Length: 610
Image (cartoon, rainbow, N blue to C red; front, side, top):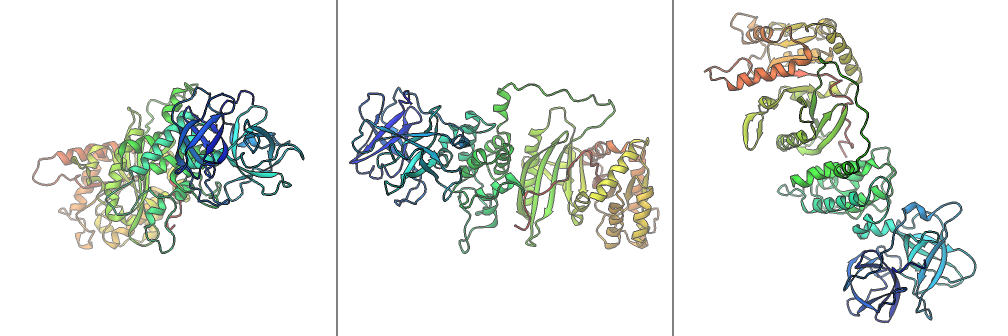
């Protein structure tokens, strides 16, 4: 403490308190010490520096409302000029507690002690009172008690002089030798810049400064032009009768916190969060899992319109990690030359469960077995396409330059015939998405079934031992077949199924369901054309039969794992064709599912109805 030249005496009119220097121009004290700062001059003098009063002004306030029990009793003073004294250093939040208890010191300025005096205390327990304060009790039954003039004093560890909090109140009766401390991690809720100075596991000062700037940018770049939907410029979500939308709740600090910690993580603090930074700081300082705050940043990114801010939130804290020159990970085992490794971009579109025409859309990128979520949002059906295309484009940033991209759409069963391959790739590119990269669809219900995923793995193991898959034709005349018998037969004999008609009529949909339930890994069909009528009868002029003939000619005998690439090449040819009649593969749809390429089926981060 003899070198603690950062200890300060604060005067505001006739009121006197303490404070401490945290940057060359900023001093922290209690808000009630400078409550009259708008009317009276505020002066700061340094206890050990021999410096005369330095004029200061209040530049930040914790929101204290004037009563002893009000939270936010913090004020940040900015000095008129920088001072040469070294600022205080902070301890980790947990360092204030221990068994045996840690001896804590406070340097205050009570009456008749203009030069200052020390008080010895200890923290009763780490439990916060009203989510704000820690109780202090005297180290011994004698000595200097906390009294007026100690408000705003730094509470420091006796052995290191590092700050763990600030004195905010003392017992009214001198016989009761206790008081209250505003812990450093609570002060950082009210002045985010302070969080950069407080040690936290895993993340250093540069990491936290960058996160703070990104959270501030996110507040200013929330979505616009869609009413209130997705806006993150609010602290607490609106209460009953308060208006607002479900999307406001979805990107509020409480919702983002719960998404970050998961269903088994620490619950919300009793009073919730007052801001996005409040939630981010709580994850940094209070939650043991260091990855939780990174998940928070990724989730927040999804509600930000500014592309650069969104990308930097998803990447946080990667640039800082790279600067540390961590040891290189061990080289992966050698991969066989003929092995095919896709780097899929997965787009999952699922009903929200609330029955109001909204869908949960999640876009993520796979690099090896690692899955990186790029966006997850609950949207009305008319906004699904634009959102998915925008996030697909961003997901490419997660892929390595030599990656084999694969666009995989996981769709509800009734959407399997959707024209996703025909979607215009972007506002500036009219070409179909299916011409840009290999594109496949998958069935949502099957993707979430443990039993069918197991059967699919078995099928692929069998396919990998065969030179080529067997194509099973289901012509138009097959409509009306017994669905159960077809399911069992396909499960036993079919590697790949080609349908002559799209799953639009009830009869064809039942045939599709048989193929899905049989865990057939590859299914191909024309997205438009014949509806699978009995009268077609497989005649020579049947469009469905002609489609299957061409399919057999071009795809039968090819390795199953390469089919997305072959179909992509067919689509490119079809889209570029200048023939008067549409190319036979123009509307070709491919259902292709390999659980090994897309491990760990996606689990939504929160209850879809909530």
